[in-house]
Structure formats: C-alpha cells, structure tokens
Image 1 (cartoon, rainbow, N blue to C red):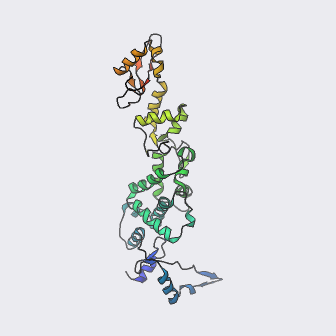
Image 2: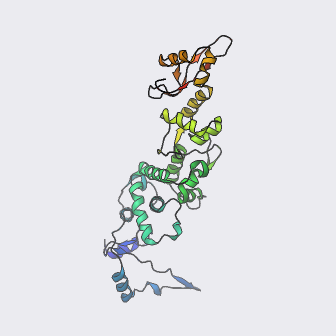
Length: 325
C-alpha cells in the first residue's frame, strides 16, 4: 500500500503515527469557508515546514489499535468482538478504557494530547482485542484500583469518566457492544439498588450485596457482617481491609445473615437451654451445636443448632467462644 492510500487512513483518529517515517502525524487545520468558497490552500504542502516537523519529531511506532484499524480498512478480520461493530465504535471504546486505566478513572480526558491518546490506544487494545473477557479484565483493574468507596459513590465514583461517557449516551452517538459488557460487569460486581437507571435501562433486581448494604438491611454492625462473609468465603473482589470493593451474591449473603440474626450468642446459651457453661462447651466440642459460620473447624465465631425446649419455639442457637475453651 503506497503513501497515497495510507493518507486516507490518516483521516481516522486512531491513526496517529506515520508508518513510513515512524513519527507522530501532525493534524492540518480544517478548511475554512468564505461564503460559497472553501479555502483549500492549507492542502498545499510546504516542504520547509514538513522538513522542520520531521526534524523535531520523536520516533514512535504505530499503536496496536492503529494497526487494527488499518487492517480493517484493508478488509481483514482481526478480532471477532471488535470486528462485530463499526470501526469508530471499537476504536473509541478502546481509547476510553485505555485512558481511564492508564491515567485514572477521574482524569481530565479533555486535556490529554495526541501523544497520550496514542498511549491510551495501546493500553486499551491489550484489553479490547481479547473481547468480552479482556474488557472485563480492564474494568476489573479500574474497580480494584479505585480510591473511592462504592458505598459512598456507587459505580459512577468507581469508574469515573468511563461511566459518565456511557451513561451520557442518548442514542445520538452510540457506544456499541461495550455498553452491554460494562453494564453486566457493574451488576455482577457493584451494588446497584433496584430501580436505578443504568445505561438507559432500569435495574429490576440487585445481583450483589456490599458489606454496607447488608449491614443496613439487617441492622448489624459492618464488622460483624464482614467477618461472617469472610469466614464463609462469600466475599468476592479485592482483599481490602475495609472491604470497600468486596461484594457477595444476594441470595447466598442474605441466607447467611438471616441465620446470623436468629443466632444466640455464647453467653446466653446456658440460660437458653438451662445448662452450665461447662456443659455448653461440651456441646460445642461434641458438635451438637453447629456453627453458622464454619471457622476452619475451630471453636470460634458464631455457632448454631436447631434446638427445641419445652414451652419455647424452635430457634437457631449460636455461640461464640475461643478455640480451646
């Protein structure tokens, strides 16, 4: 393909590097109109200016996204997920994801120069070229690296500019398949309350609970909830000390916390079943009282067992004790 054909590719934003000289392309100013006439004098090249630009340009190789765009324009199929959509949509979602990953979810994207957008394209293509799995990996990186609490800011605070870009879509300028991938990722990993308008569609049912949402719903201390979920292996996501980005599936989490709410603390076991403290400890060690949360077979945490006393309704019994007591 000659330079003449390549210059057609230069009209596409992701094409930012001259493949023949390995230098950044410099965008010419747009044509200006003067009544019925259009000033096209800017199209006439000035050899002196071109030589000066070339002399002061830094060497740069074309981004992988640029290579993808050029191959698409030549009729080649490269990536099934990206190939399933128009070039501009695949390119824009790649650059937006890459920019937020590289420069931060809340970076001032309008202030990024061409060189930084080219770098964003390189970073983003590492994810989008691998389809939905790669996109989710990039979103996972943003989720885990967020400095904002989901409980306080929700997905818009976690994903910043990327979220606002997709949320602002009103069908005038479509986002493409990336929108649905992003929406599913949020619902699978971030607490979104039912009735919330997310990317043009109302959320009918929450898929996950955060520690904070469970604590609010069942009037428990967040540390109690986090401890129970952690020991049960239900928390998903990063291992943050304050669990800002950790969630649990709604059904599993609520089933566990409902048991915890019905549980009886260890200090109340003797009065509840009319026994001594020593007898209560023997019941624990014998396995007659079962744990609400399995604590690696140690006698710690909360324990329970369905136990029926005369004139008392059946209730889960839970106990708290220290290993070896």
